Length: 223
Image (cartoon, rainbow, N blue to C red; front, side):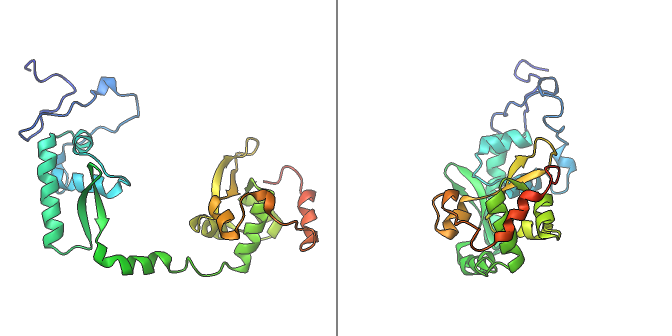
């Protein structure tokens, strides 16, 4: 092994400088999975690069991609150019673009009307009665667990809670320190939809749902 090829460095298969990566001894146990030989994977380094690009939610620089795949930056640049050309030539519904100094896969602008229809479909529809009741319980009793909401409503609310989370009206707020149950609270989107600036502006339930007092009758162990 030469002085230039120290353990933990990859010489790669391109002309550019290798990107240093931590050796096994330098990595914390369980921190990073051992990287397989990319040439043994279906599609090789090109497919591995494509897989990484499929999961990023912000543009990624060439050096980051090179480090992740343990290949040279030059090799990454070559593979990226190949993917760009392939997506363009095959008239794919998506494209690979360099934005803000990094790379990310985007849907093509020509398909914006289709995507808007897909994303908005169902999002503008009204909530069901069950969803409204569940949302009201979360709003007035938050933070609250699904089990407690189910106990109040007398039915399983798992599906309804998933709908509220998907709509961005309810979110995970950690776990109950006593029971370990996941707790839920309303979101800023919930306030915006109702035209409120804070939960303090929620109307009193007494004039509308006097039976809500029954919520206080549940034993503390119900979660």
